[in-house]
View 1 (spheres, rainbow, N blue to C red):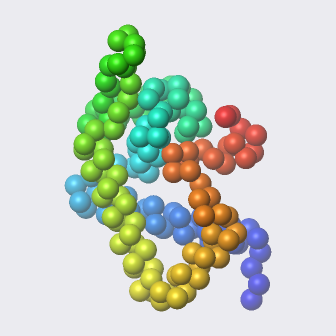
View 2: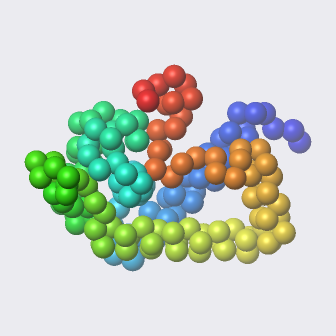
Length: 159
């Protein structure tokens, strides 16, 4: 049975969604019930250098106002903090807190567990083959982890 290109795209998206939803649910079971995938993307962007709302907005392909709302939520929950810029005391820089890094590490651990579950379901050779084929098709690093708005760039959306 041959599938359409749209079917393939939906299967790939479904695989991502399945993993992301399962990871979010498991984070909640582990005590992080207030974490959503966008929070992970935002904290990774901050770690990679997006130290203010404007830069975070650019990295996430959202407005400065949307980025500021995400920052406010992350600050309120203790995942990020604002520190004084050592080069300009008037400027505050965003930094991921120890709690924020703990959430990121938990998430990474959960994704490893989910990968292991898939490996048990389809076998290690099949999963390794799937990963090899995907890497061949999309590249070893197909999406930067700090930029969930990558699709907007490819479609001529905001940079």
